[in-house]
Length: 431
Image (tube, rainbow, N blue to C red; front, side, top):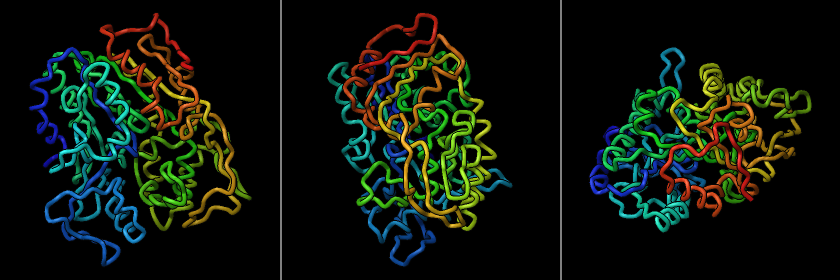
């Protein structure tokens, strides 16, 4: 079934949703968007890898089974994303179909309970909103996961069985607004924020936004990327989990070839001349990241990723402003040590796969650097429809469950007015 058709399966939930609440659409980050695949004679690297799923969907992200050492190569193959610059198209591994898991209600097909990934990420938020305003998942609050490998260009349309998230999201919002009679609030986290920024700027019209969107709450957004993404290119990322549980290079091959990585790589316009990677013979700045990726990945995905930087990074910088007709609430944290430079004891080379020997720490939320988080109020054009709240000493993922954040969200959703600014962009610090 096509991705954007799946939301129609939940239209029956909407028929009874005439409560006073603004429908809430939750757009997760990278780790919060589950993925599943369907395979038929898929080419796999090992004989023990499953090559077919007998017409059923199989969860691959995040699945405890896929974490097992003998399964990791199978997982990486299933998540392979290939970009062809000549045709400007993406494709999955041959005979592998991939989609987001748990559209709208966070529940996989043939399951009665919300998937453990969404339970882990949004349990506190859903509980708070249910207690304070009667929000109910599948009635007036919906989870809208996506293929986190992709950037906005591929989300805009479906080709070769890849992409098409934006039409699906647009239809879900339209259905909820029609059923409830109230405009929707979009809440995004982490990678979900640049994903929605592209959606509002490039995919939907001003008239559509004015008709359907009450506001946008953006949590912990890497507006101009983060230095940690470069570390993931060089030696992987543990997804915030202990390295003894998840090897540092667990999903590095996927991170290196994902077009979404371009959106969350440190952008030269924000990070300037500061060295992000230091080796015995050379320092690399944000402007050098495409070259860095080509150096380490000639035998793997370096050239593909370099082409994606050429295609996507410049246009993404042009989107750095509040979308028209949108009331943006930019919420983030600071006060958590965050990697801003990584020192290696050897020079880069083809196939380089090594953790940094030393990390230079700065301010941020533990994952995204402060200079990227605060782009909205310090760099973006001033906009009376934009406000910022800062929640000190809260981690990147802690923003989804911090009592201060949940209280502020409940209060915002309870208000009946559209604007809460005094005509100029304002910043509130919550202690």
